Image 1 (cartoon, rainbow, N blue to C red):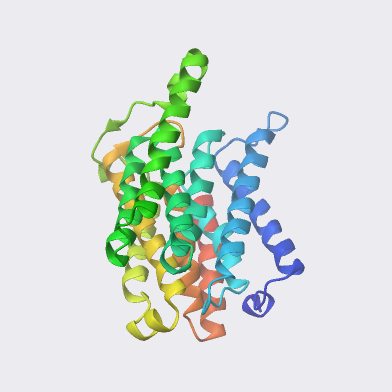
Image 2: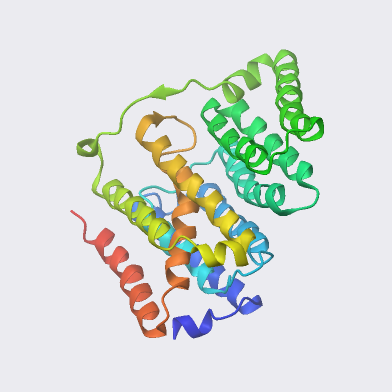
Length: 311
């Protein structure tokens, strides 16, 4: 029943997805004890709803353009279901949300840099995105591996492509330094946060966080076993590249959560999108509608009952 409703993407699917997102967010706040009437955190609730919905829309808008991608409505249900597994609602912080949207758009820029005739535009966009991200957290410099890989793999060593890579680094750094000099008391803590290194201790995690950690491990397994085969890599190169970008994001988010503790965005924030993405991949590759319905029903009601009756 559920799978039949989400077979295609249309206005009805968007409406049902929105209702599921609203339910998932309200349940998370109820479970966290933040819904004591009348002191309800409406701003945080609408922030979480808007963040999830906008992320879903951006990813859907990009994925349906990829040749060979069967991005049907079943992917939209992945986001509210996975949000129910999140240990905490998203915190009301603008800059981590900006980083999240930039990383989502980075998938399109990465695909463009590999497969567009105007590859320098893709490299420029990707370098611009990463250059902005590292102004808020230097750890995101790891993403420069992607445009450098594109340049090396495609042999794009001409001045035009090298400038597309290097110019945003210098330009964005200069602009942010100028802003800090003009508004030092406002922007210094926001654009130059302290990064605290701390190896994750499983023993110190709550039960909800251990469940999320298990989801990350499952996502890695989905990534490994559902990685596009060689034939699909050559038949649908954009599909392969999009999958590769999300794989990189998934492994980055795991390393980020295991090695780095950064206040502001909240724990596990940057792993939400890749986990939801690969859960959608899992659903997409289950051929039996009965199995899809069974899995979705079990996970949806299972996590609700688990949290309601958790000691």
